[in-house]
Length: 351
Image (cartoon, rainbow, N blue to C red; front, side):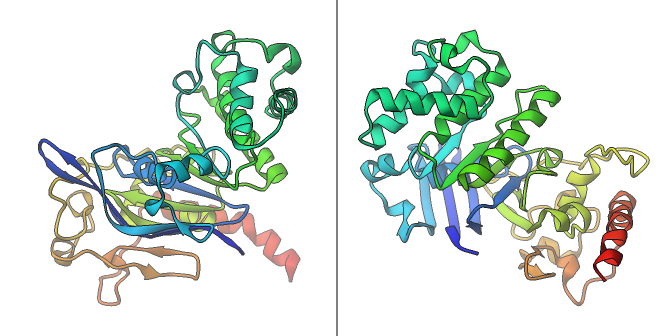
C-alpha cells in the first residue's frame, strides 16, 4: 500500500511563562492511501498539536525540536508559509471541531465552499459555484441549489458540519484531517456524519486522519488506531486489534470507560488520577502513576515498542519477556471472547 504521509520522531514544545511544555514527544506514524487512521486519547494528549503540525498551523510559541513530516517527497516542517498556503485546502484539508467558528457568518455558504477552489485552480466563478453545488448535494444538504445563497446561521448544527466537510473536500485533497468533527453533535447526527465521511472517502479516495477522545466514535470508521498519552503514541494497530486485543493498560482504561451494546462487563471503569505535567515529564513511563500494573522499571525507564504483529505494537513493560504475566481486565477479556464468537462462523466458512 502506498504511503501518503510519514511522521518521523516528531518532538514539539511550547514556550510558556511557566517553562517549556513538551507537548509532542517522539511521535512516529505512517498514513496509507485510502485508509482512515484514528488518533485517540484524553484532552491534552497531543492529538490536535500533531495534526496542526501537519497543516503548518502551529502557534507562534511552538518549538519544533526534532522530526520530519514527509508529504509528496518534501518535509512539511521545512516549508515556508507561502508553500503551505498552496498545500492547505488543495492537498491537505482539515475539518475543525466547531463549524460556527470555521464558517464566516457574513458570507453565503456557496461562496465559502467555492473559495478554496478559486484560490487553488483557474476555474471560473460560475464553474466553482457549480462544483460547490455538487459538493453540497454530496454531503446531503436538501434543496442544495437554493441553499447556496443562505448564511451559516440558517442551517442546523449537523448541516453546518456537513458544509464544513464540503469546504474541506472541494479540491478533493489527498489527506483529510477531521479534528473531533462530531463532538458538538448529538449521537444521531454523529452517526450520520461518520457514515457520510466513510461514503465520501470511497468516492474521492482521500486518506483520513480522525482525531477524537472517544474510542466509541471510531469503532466502525477507522482502519487503524493510534492511542496517544502524554504526548506519545503508546499503542497502534488495526481497529480490530485495538478494540478486541489491546495490550497497553491505558488502552484498557479507555475501553473500560466506554459502554457497549453487548453489555460486556458489570460496570464502567474510570482511569484514576490525572495526566502528567508536561513541563517536567516523568523519567519513566508517563502512565505509571495511574497504572495499577506498574512495576519498578516503569518509574525508571520509558518502555520501547514491543511488536505483537506486523500491524500491532505497544509501548508497555508488561510485554517485556521478563515481566510477570498480567491478564487484561475482565471487560477486555469478555470483548475478546465476544469477538471470537462472532468470527468463528466466518472462519469455518473460509475453510
